[in-house]
Image (cartoon, rainbow, N blue to C red; front, side, top):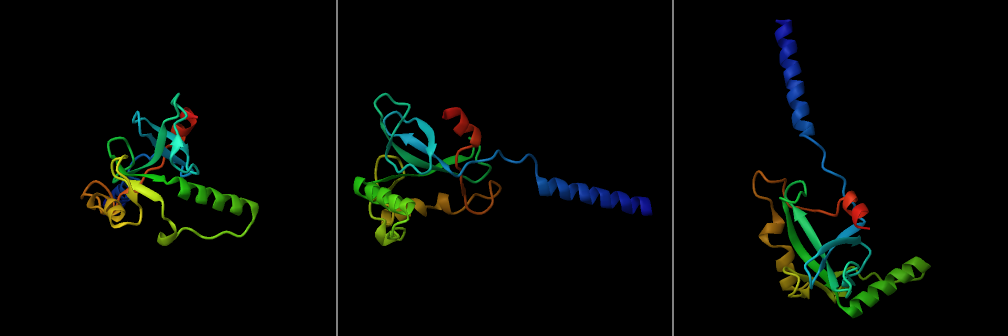
Length: 175
C-alpha cells in the first residue's frame, strides 16, 4: 500500500513539474531595442528603442525612412506566432519636442511631461506602414484596440497578446 502511495505521489510530482516548467524557456528578449521597418524596401532591422522614428535605415545607401514596427504574439514570439501590432512614427515637430524634453531631462533642467493624450499630438500610428493617423484619435484607437490585439484565440496563448521586443542575439548579430 505504501509503495502504491509513493508511486502515485511521484507521478503527481512529475506531472506537476512538467506542467509548471512546460518545456524550454523562451530565448531572452531585449526591451532596450526595437524593430524598425524600412518604408521603401520593407526590410525589418533592429535599433535602439531610444530612436524616435522616423529614422534613416543604416543598411540602406540612401538612408530610407524607417518607422518603428511593434510585433505581438499570442505565444512565445517565434516567427510562426508573430504579427504586426502597429507601425509608429512622429511628425518632425513632435520628434523635435521629444528630443528637447530628453535633453532637458539629461541636463537636469525643468521639463514638461508630455505623456498624456492631449500632449502627444504628432505621434502617429499605422496598421500598414503607409496610412498614418494620430495615436489618440478614434482611428488610432481602432488600430490599437482591434479584436486581434485584445485577446488570443483559445489554445494559442494566455489572455491578450504580448509585445515581442528583439532577441538579444538579433541585436548582437545586426550591430
